Amino acid sequence: MTPPIEWNLGMTVTEAAAPPEAVGRSRAQVRLLVVDRRRGVVRCEEFTGFPSWLGPGDVLVYNDSRTIPAALPALWDGVPARVHLAVRLSSRRAIVEKRRADGGPDPALSDRNASVAILSRLGDLMALGRVVRRFHPESRLWVIDTDRDLYELAPLVGDPIRYGYVDRPYPLYYYQTIFGRVPGSAEMPSAGRPFTYEIVARMVERGVILCPITLHTSVSSHEVTQGLARYPVLPEYYHIPRRTVRHITEARQDGRRIIALGTTVVRGLETWAASGFGRRRGWTRYLITPNNPPLVVTNLVTGLHDNFSSHLALLYAFVDPPFLREAYRQAGLAGFRWHEFGDLSFIV
Image (cartoon, rainbow, N blue to C red):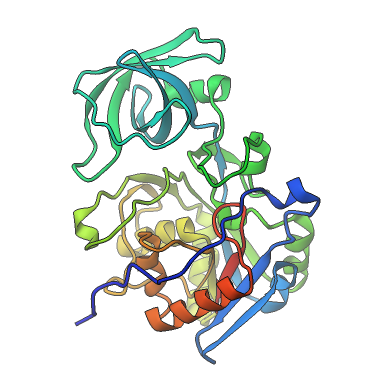
């Protein structure tokens, strides 16, 4: 029997407070933590050397979802607030997170049928809605119905979702990746952020096959202190193009590596695999854990994840907890930075 998941790695993290470009560096000038499972070795390198870890026939799958400005000014039952879009369920229904007007977390519960008014930057009423229900007893999220599509309204009134560790507001450009094509993610698929066209060209020169999927991200994962079953799993929409299916199928037949660029790609591909490789599009709540390991993805590029993050369960499906703890310990000592503007890891 698999032991309980170790949610606390005991690490003290250094958060990336700004994108590299804001301090005179390029997107690609971040660090790379290479976690070599076969050799049991951890390497701390520069991300610009990432293409050298890839070779002919490797398939790198990226998320082409584009970030939307998902933090909207609002009145929640008449009180100034911010609404963070989480999931677009339909043109008139969404799952949202209620935040304070300054963007900070708001643990206060909401009345059912509470009014939700979405405002312009000048304070004009742009949309009106009501709370339908709480999404889950352990969640900070609410299902609301509105008279307008908030995801279509967001580009007119919204800002990128920003958390307290980021030093100041940054334009939406800083929250996009070069792969983003299809608008819909509440938060940036951040594993793709350090990639530049020059790095992509170097990968292609080495014979790497790049393929897209679309998975629209919701808001950040919950802090987990007990079993995953106690916590909600947000539905996320995904789509896997036929071309990507073809390349992955051929790679699996040949025993070649299939590298996921981000945890969102793992969720999308493994949802498809769990359906018997039949459902290329739809909604997923699929969880990858040590008890439910990946069937398709062989390697993973991802950011550095916090203590008590539900992403740790997914990482443990690739890396034994003691080895991951040691890798993160070395990253901390080497000055690696966490979160969306921070450094990356590559599980090889």
